[in-house]
Length: 95
Image (tube, rainbow, N blue to C red; front, side, top):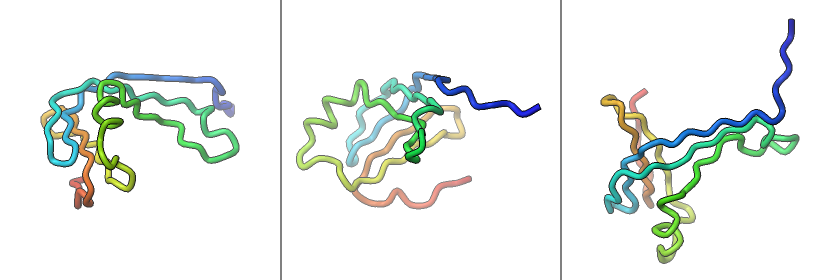
């Protein structure tokens, strides 16, 4: 039996991230991750979104902005999560 993908399947979760932006610690923020397979369509769109929520004011008030920055999302060995936005490459990660 071949199963067909469910077109409008949508999942979302709130994740507590320890957030650092350009070296400034912004504490722990709950950010929403959502996934919906139908976002891909025939255009290769990303099916998973990171919603900025609590960080929107920090990100939108930044001068000159964060275009061209690196974003790292990490699951730490102690079960916490970390989000880092930085001008320079965050370097290698442990797999």
